[in-house]
Length: 221
Image (cartoon, rainbow, N blue to C red; front, side, top):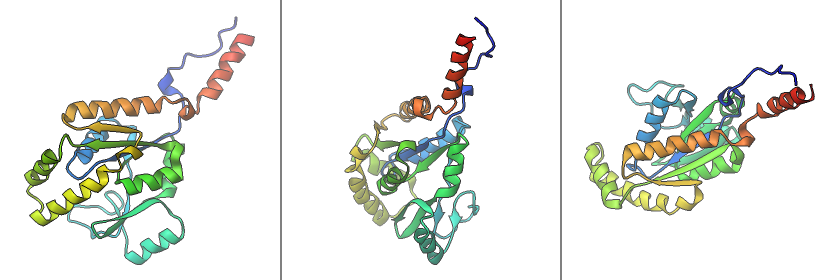
């Protein structure tokens, strides 16, 4: 039998990217885990949202967010330019569709730190590309302690976040995976394992068709 096919390791096969969603109540750890994942894995990049929120000191337009006015945001909604959008604490946030689709086709994974509303919209628009993870705190007492330990929010804001947390937690069953963050390193390890597994799904391995065809041609030869 002819041996005209060069060995190819699985990770070298081309694949379609995925939309990797982390959601949790504020203080449950999604932003920390997202930051750890970005440092650990060069194949995934953070989604850059469009927002009407005022730009904060140190933030870079186009890198941290795309900052726009309310009228421009409304125009983008009318043009169906968003994969998802939501209003959070009085400000509007949305994920622009065009750059995300381009990155998916290039095999780039996109990380989303969004709430359940945004996740639901994203799944409706791009379900087959979406992997949804919800992160729960070990208890509401621990959640409150984490918010208070930040020392960045007033008591009023903390109470608002706690009330919002109850609403967000009620949507836990709209996710593919649900993790309890009672140990940050252990929770992060589970997130990494989920990402690795989802990358291996057959439907995302776009290079498999040509690879198998070459194998069959080798057999016929």
